Amino acid sequence: MTTPGTVLPGTEIGRILAWWPAGHQTTTLRVEASPLGVVLRPEDTPTEPMGIPPVQARRLAGALLVAHAHAVATVLTTGPELVASLMVTSLPGLGGKLLTLACPGLEPRRWALPTTWQPTRPGDPPLTHPEAAGALLGHAAGHPPADQHPSPPP
Image (tube, rainbow, N blue to C red):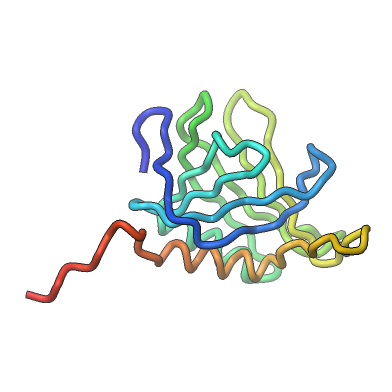
């Protein structure tokens, strides 16, 4: 999935609309199937994607699908540290889930998927429900990239 400092691009499978607390606004996380796993590409920092091996992506997907589940996955980044942790935790006060990217020496980056949040302006799209985000990650983890074709049976 990576060479030092690079996460391979993938085929976009879908998008997760989340609340980005640091930016005080909504943001999109593009979900891509890549040759070696899943790539999450935040709209606020598209040049800093997170590469997630398939087993780790399925672990995160499961935590998003189950109301009170938590998970931690090892992800590959293009930042100063090649390896980081992506955590899924519950948001008890707001309902939903919080995604936190933690890397040594850097402030954590967070994206929230609260289930009780409603758009504040007419026409604003609703945030992605954690279960829908989990289903999307799980689908991407099992989705063959567009440039790979199954081998014919022997």
